Length: 75
Image (tube, rainbow, N blue to C red; front, side, top):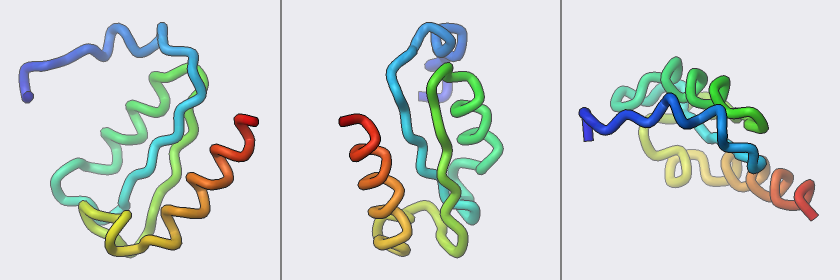
């Protein structure tokens, strides 16, 4: 996985995208998630405070709300 790099293709992705990143993730630094969102034309990043690598388990309601809002805005 560490050699798989398609960052040069990101600018071509125009679909609405929601990124969810935990501020305390020690496996994927928050700056990498922010960089990914910045590279996508139509992306939004939600940062989850007080969570590590598994925000969907550690802070479930903090993850559910932005996802629900994102999906509702697509309709």
